[in-house]
Length: 245
Ligand code: CTP
Ligand code: MG
Image (cartoon, rainbow, N blue to C red; front, side, top):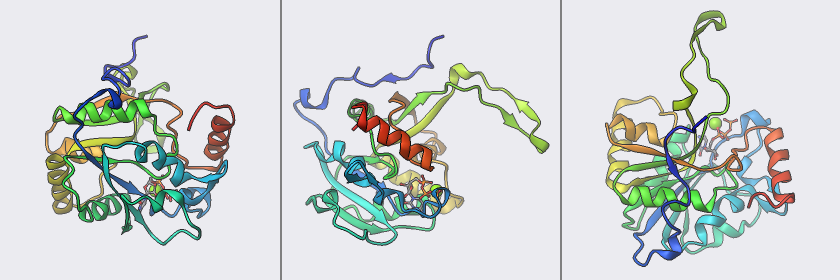
């Protein structure tokens, strides 16, 4: 079966081969309470010798086209995290939901970077090829969302769990981060969300509400989000086997 149509990561050329790169800023929501892990602040969990946040930021911080990072935190970490010592990184206050944290981080931007990337602190292994590919798409003036084609059949249910729809899997993707947008589009999307109320499911859906084009970029299953203890075990195994990081 063919995967749904999207942009293949790596197909747009590696950043280091491009001579004139536009700059980008990165917003990192990291202020969640980790309720589904029993109240553990996931960005500060130790994963094979470094924090999940350090893992998550590393593939971005190695890029010269990244000019600014704003990390939204609920409270300071209890130890020194190397990624937070980078000169480009600053801290903003987290909000009461993920959207508020992203919006607060956006308000703290100081650079004039033309592209805005958002990446969850709870996602330790953003693939370098997907970052490159999302940046190339965003440079062309449209939004880009890393993700993977759905492998499970998805059901929509009504009352009592009764299935009301089985959408065609060929068109379904699971959205991840990074999600990268032209700055003006992202600014308008945040403004619209603030006036309309109701936090969006992800950053792209805000831009979609503007009627602007947003494209899926194929990433990888290794780009997992740590939600539960099982995910942490998988993440440990991926590092141990050299499959991620
Ligand atoms: N996040 C945030 N501010 C919030 C809620 C979430 O910055 N008020 C961040 C989290 O820190 C995480 C990302 O958004 O990096 C994705 O959220 P999720 O995986 O849901 O993490 P938590 O909200 O911490 O977990 P839970 O929903 O289980 O409480
Ligand atoms: Mg949450």
